[in-house]
Each structure stands twice: as structure tokens, then as C-alpha cells.
Image (cartoon, rainbow, N blue to C red):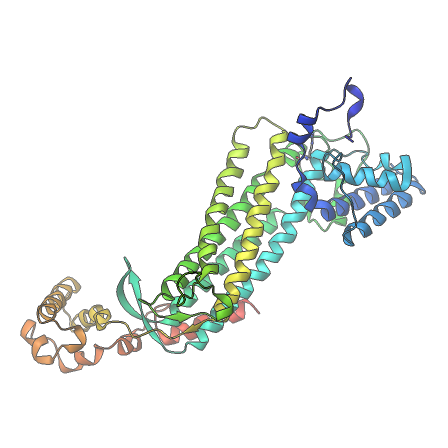
Length: 450
Ligand code: ARG
């Protein structure tokens, strides 16, 4: 049953009902009840409900809340949305007094509030999950000790770095995803309840009171903005989308590193899957699905931005669609954070050493320390590389004799830089790929996460 039938001569067509009713909002039930309880308390406080009506409405709503919490709340096909369902159920429990609940309120401010309550809760949950993943990455970085790998550019081995440095790069990336959620939570801290249909009300309400009861810092300054804006929902979806993209890159490295060609990591059997055809396979499906599901959330970002772009002020039914994108982005991110955290926590990292070419830049820097301009040093080491390649050798095979044939400024001590481990040991730049930098990062992240 709709909340609005009396101005119509006929009831809604089946096709209208089937097209316009979206059960997706049912998951806002607890948020909707929290909002209604605060609204009723406010109505009572300002005298819009008398001393009997307020408590009776509240008791009724608490019964509905108990049903909802117990999973016993029954939605009917005839409920137009979650708000209508709650009002219908309240009426069944307490009779016509239920009709006073919607005093000085519209579903327009109600749904804006419900979504904000949802995002506030979901944002805090995702932050907690991101912190667990950052900790799993930090623990892994600590566990791998001083193991050295190559860092890559163009997927070609570049410089020698501690594997821990690589893992911690992801920890910093997810921590920025966390801080984006934290920033969003500050902007979400404003209640739209009391904006009504979009223009406010002639009744003496106190939006600041219901806002405070719901734990909001503040309330809206403009009722049109309060009911019509969805930029914060779009921001939620973007923040989730960027987090999914971060996770997708992490997932890609897990897939790559688990390949026979890389052989850097093995995952627990229980975190991998097999092949129905090839008995030897052990596949990192969770990481692959994380990478794949990021695509869907990128789609949500495009969708929720498109949803707003041509809307006239203020509320339009188009906005009902916002929830699907928020829920999908949130569910995908929540599931992915859990899956990747488990995978990383159970991973065993044991990479083979990188090729000795990764110290070419260090060799050039040993000439730079002797006053050779970097461009010239680069050129000289390039000739060393070419000569060794001609001989079918690698940089670790270079002798002082060979180096000095190319340039006599090379010295015996330069041979000591020619291993990936000594390359990492010689690196002193702040935040660079060295063991002291790794230890500083681990301490800083542990400190940040308390
Ligand atoms: N189900 C609607 C939504 O999600 C609730 C608001 C309906 N408001 C209206 N004026 N029809 O947006």
C-alpha cells in the first residue's frame, strides 16, 4: 500500500509497481528506524506530540526495531519502499497514531538521512578492515626480513630493494584509502533530517535536536541541498573505487609473484583453488577476482556521477538508484579487503635473487662519487653493459680489468657494489629502498595504527 493514494482515481498499475519499487533499500531498515526514533523524540520535545503520543510512538517503533533486529520484520510486496514498510508495520502495531510519525518529514529527507547513516557505518567498517590489511602487509614486511628483490619499471628489473619495501608501498597506499574514508566521514557528519520535501516546514521542528540524537555534529543550512545532493554518496563510491583500484594492483602483484616465472610467493592451499583439468594447478583466484571486481566498482563511480549530472533541483526519483551503487561498491570493497587480508596473512614469500644487472645504477653512482658527471657515468656503465652482453656475461661477472678497460677511473672497491645486497646496503636516501628505511616505515605504520 502506498502512502499517497487519495488524490488518484485508480490504484497503481502492476507495471508501475513492478518498475518503481526497488527492494534494494530494505537493507536501510535499521537506519530508517534509528532516524524515525530520533525524529519522534524531536517531535515530542518540541510539543508536536503530546505526553502520551510520544511514548506510544516510541514503544511501537521499538517493537518494530526488535522485529528488525531479530530478522523477523516482514516486508510485503505492497510496500513501496522501506519507509512505507515501517509506517505500515507501525500502524499494524499501534493503530492510527502511527500516522503522526511522518509529521514535518518527507521521504526525501528521510532517505537522504538513511543513506548517510548507512555510509557512516560502512565507512567506519571499511576503515577497520583497511587497518587490518595494512597490518597484515606490515607483518609480512617484518617477516621477510632483509630479502632483496628487484623493483621494476616497465616490468623490467630496475634496482635492488628489500622485498619489505615493496610490500610497504601497498601499506601506504591502503592507508591513504583509509584517510580518504576518514575525510569523507567528516563531511558526512551533517544530518539532512528536517529538510522535509525540500523546502522545510511551517511546524516548529528542531533539526539540530534530531541531528544530535543521531550523533551528527551539525545539520543542514539549505533544505534543497539537503534532499537533492548526492555528492557525498558519489564520494563514498569513488573512495571505495580508488580503494578497489589499490587492491586490484596489489592483487595483480600477488598473481604475478605467484607465477612459476616469478616464484616469489606461495599462498596457503586453503586460499587457492585447483583446476578441473590440470592436476598440478594452484590458482590465486581470490586475487584474480579482486582485480576483476574492481571493474564493477569503477562502473559504479561512472554511474553515480552520471546519475546526478542532468538533474533539475531538487529531489527526483532517479536518486532512488544511488543506493545500488553505494551498496555494490561497499559490498565489493568489504569482501575484497577480507579476502586479500587473509591471503597476505597466510602468504610465504621466498623470492629468488634478482639478476645482477640491478646494480648498474649503483656502479654509475660510484663514478659520480669520484666527480664524474652523472650523464657521463651513465654512458660509461652503458658501455660496460654492452661489453658484458657481448660476452654473454652479467654485471656480477665484471672484473676490475674489464671495468678499467672501459674507464680507468673505476676502482677495486667498485666491485663490492656489484651485488644486490650491497646495493641495498649502500642506499641511504630517506624513504629509499634500504633496511633502515624499511624499519622506520614499520615503526611509523605501527604507530599510526596504534
Ligand atoms: N524510495 C525513494 C528513494 O529511494 C524514497 C523517496 C521517495 N520520495 C518521493 N518523493 N517519491 O529515493
